[in-house]
Amino acid sequence: MNDYLNIATCYNDKIRIYAANTTNICKHAQEIHNMWPTSAAALGRTLTMAAIMSTMQKAGERITIKINGGGPIGQITVEAKYAKVRGFVHNPGVYLTNNNGKLAVGKAVGTDGVIEVIKDLGLKEPFSSSTNLISGEIAEDFNNYFWQSEQTPTAISLGVLFDKEGKVSDAGGFLVQVMPDCPEETISQLEKILSEIKPISSLINEGKTPEDIISLISNGDYKLLEKVNLEYNCDCSKERFSRGLISLGKKELEEMIAENKDFEINCNFCNKKYIFTCDDLKNLLNNAK
Image 1 (spheres, rainbow, N blue to C red):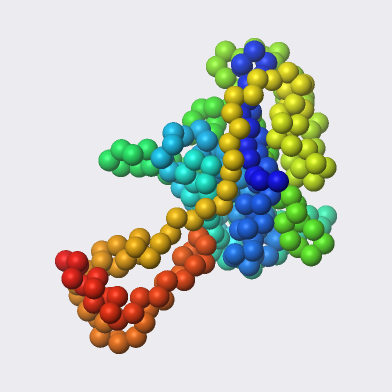
Image 2: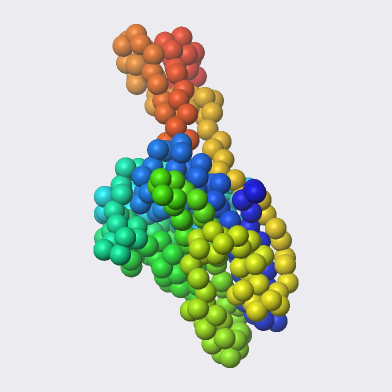
């Protein structure tokens, strides 16, 4: 089944829900980055969050999320452009567990740092906001981000489940937002439901769809607004890296040509490799300043 996200409202349009299955995205990310489970869980949760947030933006707008809490995983970097996400972690080889055997994502990420969200809205300068990490578990940190940066009461659940071989088996997330003037009675009812609901990765493992998850949160009474297909997508190309090399300037390119060898550039987001020969660099030199 393809990854997708549903957007719905419920409780007389006073609550908005985003529910997503991102299993394929997280599987693909683990595979191309050769990630151990704790690294894969941290990146998978962030990819899911970015996918959800991207559908809150207009087509063509890009979101970049950077998380660095000082933990062994290093920085998490994720980009999203309406339903298409890509990302990587500085250290893919982290496998930490708590005493209960569950993955210690919070320890791997750390709390000595911030979540930074950069929104490129097509204006002169991108808009950037950040909040301190509070647990490193990603979902709790984004709850805090939405409250501190956007003053929006939000409940978020993100999860990645693994099989016995340490491979991603299920992943997804949901985000619930309270609209202005929502009655306290509705908020209390919602809080009770959310306190009793199973972890999102367990729900998906049981075969629950985004529609089922929305139905659980809304007591079966909701209005479906949109269904959006999600995918891991990297838009890197040799042409884009060529522009980056040109921006280095003539002096830098001349020094590279003088080494008389091919240069290999690796895309951090998809691990695709691009080879630039001396002839390639000489051609770029003609366009450099």
